[in-house]
Image (tube, rainbow, N blue to C red; front, side):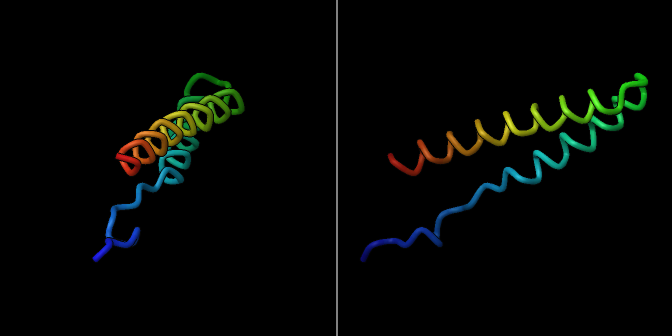
Length: 62
């Protein structure tokens, strides 16, 4: 019997992007540049989410 994709864990990268957004905004406010902090937070959170997605995709193909 073949296993379905529902049995495998799903990794949510959206929460990492959101956490990056919040942390970046808070750090940006602390340094007096909330826009730059927010943008950097979203970019870094997105990068981590992308790496997590690629790792899960590679693992799924094995």
